Length: 120
Image (cartoon, rainbow, N blue to C red; front, side, top):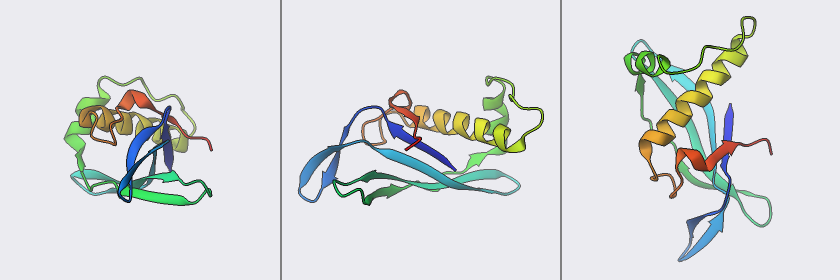
């Protein structure tokens, strides 16, 4: 599971009003088949009571294995020779960053550079 959050607040709809919040993204699982990798997760924020407010689910947007192979050519080598978990989390973070970059500011006005790892 990968959790990201924006470094600053962004405006989101709150009923008929707009509210500025730290937008969070969680990739909770990956589905893989012969042709694609499909991330599953959602955007959310915490309200004033600490409750999760769902903004939107990640649109099922498969990434072709052939596209992943092209993307990997520009990525740093995997860091661990002994931990598959570490390697998978490294690549997941890099692929999510790539998708955020490709989507521009369509994620609540935030770009890939606005997100950081969420350790909360």
